[in-house]
Image 1 (cartoon, helix red, strand yellow):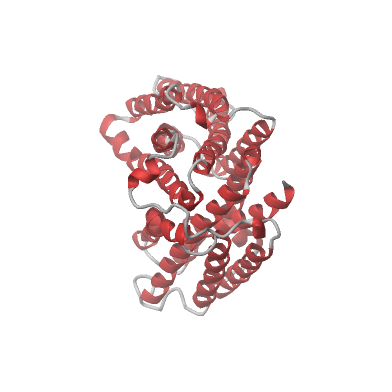
Image 2 (cartoon, rainbow, N blue to C red; image 1 turned 90 degrees about the horizontal axis):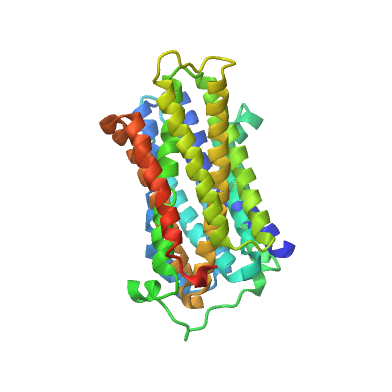
Length: 409
């Protein structure tokens, strides 16, 4: 199994680089060059290709092997980064990024989205059912490490990092990863798709795979309450007097560390033959309890005399709840990805890339929507009633588990 997990770890780490680059590092570099906050915020619009993975996933199912697509897309990412290294990010007096740079960053996201489909397909076809737990732990942990590395780790390691040096380092990393994707012995065992194999023609082909309807509904909803509360809770603590620097540390570095720890625990339990659905049920119950504690804490902070001052018990409880929810979120994510991958393994081989892309796209939508709308909901209802809504949304996946089919474990 190690021969499979090591190359997957390296490739998933590389897969996390574009997200960290555009969510953390690029905004800092752009702001340092004088771009407005509005212009910096528009960088997130470059994520659009990730929402359209279903458009090219059938092509990966029908043409070539996942390993070939993975190597080619990763090498193409290296080429795009090399071109970006030669392009100045901003011209003196210009209000935003040059059109050429924007186009290349859009291509970077397109290539990364194709690489994502190819790598997930490789994992679905490579891992045995007993290896899904450790495999998805590697997926989640390596991706988060790659994102953290590109999202500020490089800047911390190299304070004098320039735009050309940044993208030359990324280009070299992508080309090394492309060589790994092509040369890894474990990946060479993957068979080429046969012309006679089933290819998707309609959405019904995807939904006919056992367990798909339930899994699609679950991955769309399982993060609604968690993401909404997670995006608002640090801001509400800030409103009640918590330190911005301390919150940044605990909701940034602390959150990543706790999430990785939770993901690792999930993989370890699955490797010890815990069934995914019972493990999910326990983790979701704990997560619901943690969110209930956060909600109670927010209500208590509205009472006279309540304070988040240094050394207070409330301050410790608030920071502890932040870490606990990220820990449980990591555990839930790894277990859910294991269920997703197991469901896609039930599909015909010629359908697996499209099938997993469908589930992954719904999972992404389920995480983006609450984070985007949480502020609007809080402004409309008020913070405390808003957390009541998040509690209800967090209870919904537990109800869905009672409807799960036996084919998903």
